[in-house]
Amino acid sequence: MFSAFSQIAAVTMFSLRSLPQRKGASAAAMLGIAGVVAVMVGVLSIAQGVLQTMHDSAGNDNAIVLRSGSDTEMMSGLSGDDSRLVAEAPGVARDPRGPLASPELFVVINLPMRSTGTDANVPLRGVLPNARALRDGFRLVNGRMFKWGLNEVIVGRGAQLQFSGLDVGSSIQVGQAHWPVVGVFETGGGLAESEIWVDASVLQDAYRRGNTFQSVRVKLDSKQAFEGFKDSLTSDPRLNVKVMREADYYASQSTVIYNLITGLGTIIAIIMGLGAVFGALNTMYTAVSSRAREIATLRALGFRGGPVVTAILCESLLLALGGGLIGGGLAWLAFDGYHTATLNWASFSSMTFAFDVNTALLVRGLGFALLIGLLGGLFPALRAARQPVALALREL
Image 1 (cartoon, rainbow, N blue to C red):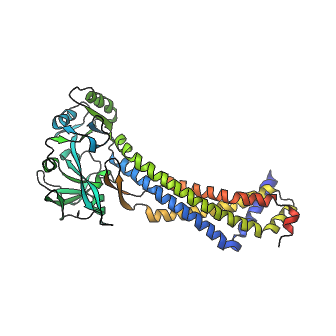
Image 2: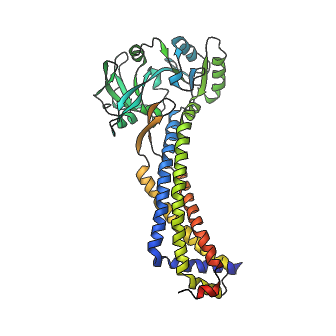
Image 3: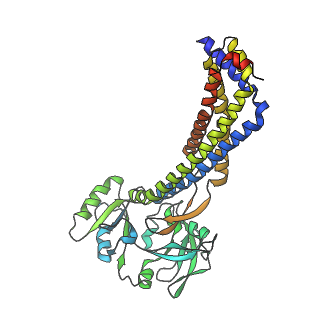
C-alpha cells in the first residue's frame, strides 16, 4: 500500500512540475473552464436573486387572505366588509390602534425603464397605515411619507433605480392626473421595493373601485396561530376566502421564473461545458503525447498504470480547479448585488431584484468545473496507462 501511494506521489509531482512547459495549452483549458463557470454562476444567480427577494418579502408571522380560487392579488377581490371580518378573526395580533391587518389594492401602470426607455408594468399599491407594520424593515430613505387623502405617492428603492420619473419631486401620471413622488422607501430587499404606494382610498376613487380591496395581510400572534386563523375564516359562511402563509404565497409566485431561469441556465452550462470538456481533452492528450517517452520510462522502471492515471487526472483536476476559482471569482465580482428588473409572471408586473452569487452557487460552479476536468482527463489518462511501453519508448 505504501508503495502504491509513493508511486502516485512521485508521478503526480513529476506531472505537475512539467506544467510550465505547456503553459499555453494549460492556460487555454483553464480559461475555457473559467468562462463556463462564470456564465453558469451568473445565470443561476438570477434565480437565486429572485428567490431571495421573495424570501425577504415574507414576514415570519404574516398571512395573506385572497378571494377563494385566486392564486394572485390580480385575480382576487374582497369587499370592505370582508376585510373587516378578516381583521377581527382570532389569532390576529393587535397594537394600541387595533388589529394589525392591512387591506390593500393592487393595480399596474406603465412607466419607462431607465436602461432602455421601453414601457414596463409597474405595481401601484393602495395601502392603509398598517401596511408599514406588515413589512419587516420598512423605512423611508428619502423624502417623507405621503399624506393620507392626497394624490401623493412613495416609491420603492428598487423601482426608483429601474424606472424613469420616480425621483423625489417628480410625478407619475395616473389617468388624467399627475401624482407627485414625495418619498422613497426600503423593505430590506423585499418585493415591495418594486412597488409604488399610495393611499388606498385615493386609488379606489381613481379606478372607481368603491370600497373594495384585493387582499388583506395580517400579522398573527404567532406562527402557531395560523391554523386557527385559517379555520375561523374558511368556516365563516359570510366569507369566501383563501388563506395562505405569506411565505407560501411568495414561494408559489417564484416557482415559474425560478424553474425557467434554472432550466435555461443548466442547458447553457451543459452546452458550454461540452466545449470545455473537448478543450480539456485536447490539452491532456497533448500533454500525454509530449510525455509519452517519460511515462513509458517510468512504467519500464516498475511504475504501475494506476499511478499514471492518477497523476494525469490530478493535473486535469488542478487545471479545472484553477478555472473554477477564476470563473467563480469573476461571476462574484461582476454579478453579485447587481440590480435589475424582470417580469413577475404571477402578477404580470415588473419586479426588481439583485443577483445573488452565494456560497452554495459558487460551490456548485466549482463542482461543475471539477466534473469537466475529470471527464477531460480520464480518457487521456487511460490511454497513457494502456499504451505499450516498447511503442511509447520509440516516440520522438
